[in-house]
Image 1 (tube, one colour):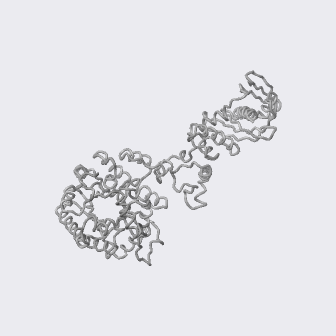
Image 2 (cartoon, one colour):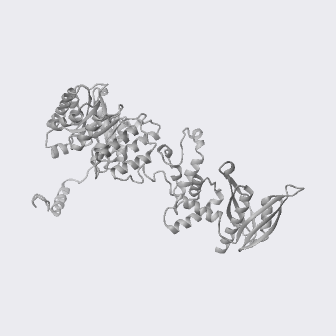
Image 3 (cartoon, rainbow, N blue to C red):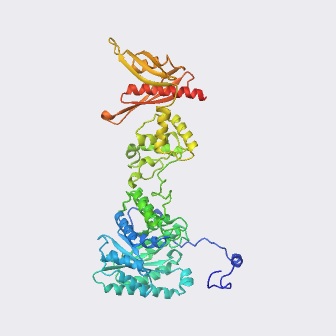
Length: 586
């Protein structure tokens, strides 16, 4: 039982269900929203070629939706974060809503914490006392926006406000007049006005236009230099993005003296289309966007400004916002709000620049290696499979582009070793490497770290267990023919040390001939791949040597040393150990 509510006032679930069934017989529960008549719409053929004005509403709209609203110090840190990113308009509070919001507004004003190029905004309902409190909070502010709002949909005016349309228009207009009069008493402050017909997208366009015109006339001082901000919110997503764009275009086309207003949009994400709705609204003529970092806000949240701004950047539009340290921004906002950023949130999520599947990993690796060809082939500096934007522009590191699991491909695993350790695993060896990593991943049943991949590489290919352990190899040229090599191999076979004479027309050939004397299997050395890691005295040679067995099977071994020949003979011994172990397993 709900306290203070009688059974008659609070019907049972069964009764509510019965009423719903009765209603459903008369009208459908849901219907498609009716589109406005706009046969000559122009927005579908347009492109966004310049940045909108940005207004971050994290400290008001985003904050009020947090389970644990920000305290004053957290709010100040967040404010400075937004300023650092480059936002020039920031809605900081609803001063009449709480003492905390009032005090925070007073603090940033009185302590001179607002950068000269930043304009704060404060929200107020269309109620005289709340407007007075709001203007009081702005005393001595250099410049600010007073943002007034009033619901205009029939759903709100009839069921929430209980007012007629004429009464709602008068409320909005009288609020504009009150703000104008109070601002006139603050001659040292530049006070601008913003009006939001809340639930604009659920309001008849003609009525939305009528109430906005009433506010415009009541404000009187709108001009090209000091325009009125008309914010047309998609407060609840009840219609698709193209409907919203039609409404914005209709409004812009039918507003007289268009240069005297800034058309702003504030979109919520109830149906998951806030970004699409906002982008289409910009095509339709909107000048300004309100939103929050990572979409914080009521219900499903607001337009995510990180996503929208980086969408535009990826298309060549300079936004004026700096997300080059996005991981740090994510950490700060998560700490302050105690709300985690979803791992697949575009741009900011942990996994959004990560490939787990083999085909994606291979394509990214090849694309990164061919990136220098992009300007000539595609006319752009960045063109990589599966990555529409350079992660480095957002402070993301390349080595996390590919994550290793049992589903990973050979190219992805090779990419990790190359990026983290400078190892250029040859293509023919990559399938063996993949099998080794896959066996480990299947055993541990989780993602494999870069360090673990390297450890597998070392244990499986560089230092594999087996019958052979090389102690040393001393080759020397023949006194009369320098192409002829004489040498000595010292090696343990099954724990017993052996000394073997080596003769051949090169140090590797001589070593192979000598090793065949103690090897239990027939083998040959194929052409091998070598590389250097590091420079100067600290450089290390790495040799990747394929061992071909008499059966035709090829098994790789890897060796490292400061001398390339010594690296190669170590790789041969490692490969022979792996080859004999492979035969035993078979």
